[in-house]
Amino acid sequence: MEEMIKEYIKNIDEYTIEKYAKSNDINLSDDEVKIIYLYVKNYWYEFYKGNPENLFKELEEQLSQENYQKLLKLYDKYKKKIN
Image 1 (cartoon, rainbow, N blue to C red):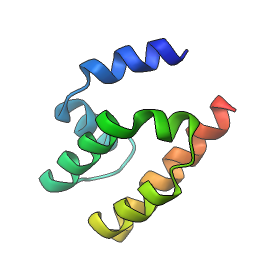
Image 2 (image 1 turned 180 degrees about the vertical axis):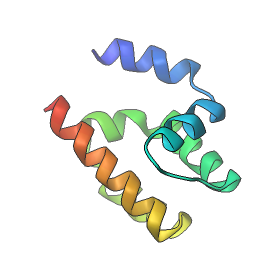
Image 3 (image 1 turned 30 degrees about the horizontal axis):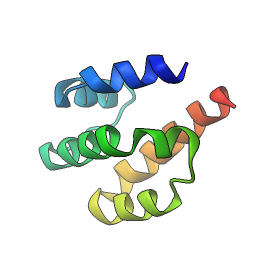
């Protein structure tokens, strides 16, 4: 599973982030798309296997409160499925 995620992340782009967010009723600004893209590309493993608490604190300061809450809820949903 980890190798599949790693390969997917290697090929992900900002458009994919934006499209996925919209499909989950999250309307990101262009800046928010870029921020999330960078976090996904650089910290995917921390979100997958580590403790991303500090990363979420950083994201909370950079995203609108509404989008942050929706993303956190989406993360929790998929994290539970993985575990």
